[in-house]
Length: 366
Image (cartoon, rainbow, N blue to C red):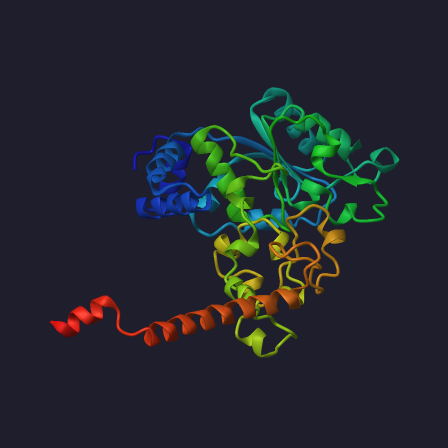
C-alpha cells in the first residue's frame, strides 16, 4: 500500500497488513450497518482522508469513557486511528500541563474554528455559577460554550455528557446538566450514551465521518442510529426464552444456568436502545447479559432514577400493554405455544378421520 496519507504511513510503520486493514473496514461496515459493497468505499476514503483535529474536554466524570477510548482493540487499525488523531487537548493523556495546556486549547479553538471536533466527557454543573467544576480559572460551562460553540461538531461521550447521568440524579446538588442543555443550539451535536460508551462505537463514528465527510443519521436523542437504532431486547441472545416465558427466578437457579431470560431479575433490555448484543465489549469477548447479568439501561436518559431498583423488573412489557405483568406474559406465551401444538394435533387427527386425500386415492388406484 503506497504511503499516500497519514493513515497509510502509520499502517506501514506499525506492520499492519492490507488484509488486516480490510478486515477492520469490514468490521466497521458491520457496526455501521452498511452493506458489504461499502467496504471498498470505506477503505479508499480512509486511506485518502485528512487527519482531523480533536479536543477532549472532561468535566463531571469518572474518566470511564477515556478508559474505553484508550482500550480500542490492540494493535488494530482502531488503535491507530484513535492514537494518531491530532488530539490537541486531553487532560488525562496530554504531556502538557498548567498554562501550557490551556494555551494549546485556546490556540486550537482560535486557529481552527469550525474545523475541529470537540469531545465532551462528563456532565456540566450550572449551580452556584458553575463553581463546582473549574479548570484554569474558568468554569466548565464557560469552557464548553467557548469550545463547543466554535467546533465543527460536538460529540458528547457517555451518559453523563449526553443526559446528565449520575451527577444529575435527584437531588442533583450541583445542578448538573447535559452538554446539549448547557450549550443550547449546537447544530452538530452527537450523543454517544452508555456508561461508558463502547470504544467500537466511538471508532465507528469517526470512521463514518472520515469516510463520508458527514455525520450519521440520529435518533430523537441525537444518538447515531447505527448504534442506537434497535432495542437490546430485539437482538438479545435470550429473547427466545422471553418469548417462551422462561425466566431466571433467582440467581444461580436452573434457569440462570441454562441462559433463561433475565427480565425478572431487573433486565432493562426491553426499554434500552444500544447495539451491545452485536458489538459486545472487550474486543467482542462478551457483554453483560451474555455473562448472566441484566442490562441496567445505562444508555437511556435518567437511567439512575428511571431504571432503579436495578434488580427489580419493570412493571410493563413492550407488546403486552403498559400494565402487563411479566408472570402473566410468560403464562400467555406458554399458553400460546401450547395452543399451537394442540391446534396442530387436532388438525392432524381430523385429517386422518376424514379418510385418504384425493392424491392418496390416486396413488392407491395406480
